[in-house]
Length: 290
Image (tube, rainbow, N blue to C red; front, side, top):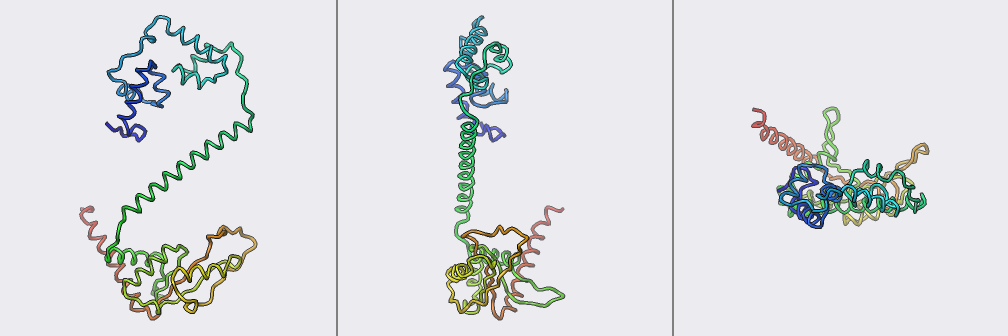
């Protein structure tokens, strides 16, 4: 049975491990510490029907634990290690072994730092893998797009990133600017769906003057499969010596401007389609407002 806490989601698997440890002779505290189960109700359910090991019932069981704790301390074990091994509280361990010398540190501070760094790097790698698995699963879930789905995606994409007409400045033209190659490819696929011929498109690169300008121009030309004659003059962003550039590296290629010639009618269709989406959303939301 799953628990609401994600930590105990695989309850049956956790119970199997808990039962195996119980039958191997471990106490409740030992099982709790090894499985990191902090909830007593959960621990009770995990061990339901499993009797405690005989050694925990002996009158001198506490003395045996104390003796074993002192042995382990003399071998150089830390409080944490002893707690996991014996299932005792740190306060009890401290009371039992406080007269014994502290174990010598076996590692230098540099070695300890290196171990901690490797552990952190391993954790980051695990997080990256989990992050990528989530992205891959979401990508697979999208599947093939219908023409209507692509149409609606394109309208939303343009209204978020494209130029727009203003009451105080009439400019009914279709101009789309973005630095994400995927966004550019989706936008071009959307224009194809709408029947916009590629010879009606003009391109321009916008990039920092200290970047690889020629390389960026070639990259965008290859991406959109267009001849360089379809590209207008590149716009260079001048360098401000008082700022620190973050858009650096081989993956920085500036932005690509995509403009549709004679696009006034297309712009009006885009704007009308967007407000059609807005109206449909409002109507769909009406039952929730009643």
